[in-house]
Amino acid sequence: MAKGVKPRVKVPKTAAAGDTITIKTLISHKMESGQRKDDDGNVIPRSIINRFTCDFNGENVIDVVLEPAISTNPYLEFEAVVPEAGEFVFTWYDDDGSVYDTSKKIAIE
Image (cartoon, rainbow, N blue to C red; front, side, top):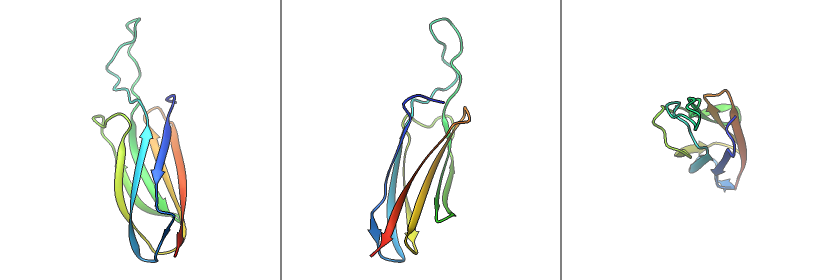
């Protein structure tokens, strides 16, 4: 598991039913390509975020496969339609098997 990983998301607190909202996500993650060596000459194991998903009330909104060229601290912004009040669940998957998640609720005005 990478150290200092912190997922952050920005979701409006309320929306009208059927509105399209903008969601912003950022995860603090150093990313390691697996090509560098430490001071002793040992290869530092690869550790990148390779997949991101977002679900709303159990339904998939977005599922993104990220490639090795993804930057440190990946930022993703996307739109989603909000049919009802509920909860967004955000999940990031790391090469080393770690899974990072967070969630945000949204109410209907």
